[in-house]
Image (tube, rainbow, N blue to C red; front, side, top):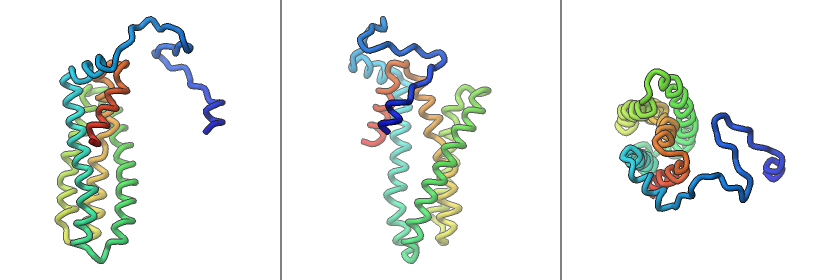
Length: 188
């Protein structure tokens, strides 16, 4: 990491301001943290996005916290295989869904500017029947593969489009703090 840090230079970015050397004045007025919070919480769209992300994270926490107990109670002979399959479902299903969500949004946003909002909503709605299959199926493999895996495959597409929507809703000077506020709210 040290060698990489010492030898790698950040490429110039199109349409981005040039980074000033230490001590150089960039001509912009400094903004306090309180002013940044006023901008973040003064925008209704940003507040709604932060609340929506918090609710979405709570759903994920409920699934992660509840499912091991459910599988232990309903399919007690499958505890070890549940641990392995769940790891694959979360990693592979979540990865594929994230990639697909970003790809679909990138293509769709050209013709529909609100695609950043639609893709996460559609993914969450499509995930509902699959989580029902996961929780109500009497067959372990149907529950894991047709239920949980498919739920992850369609519902985890939300994060990339969501971050894009949040960044577009905030001025550049407060985007980092805005994302930090969202992550704090979602994990608190």
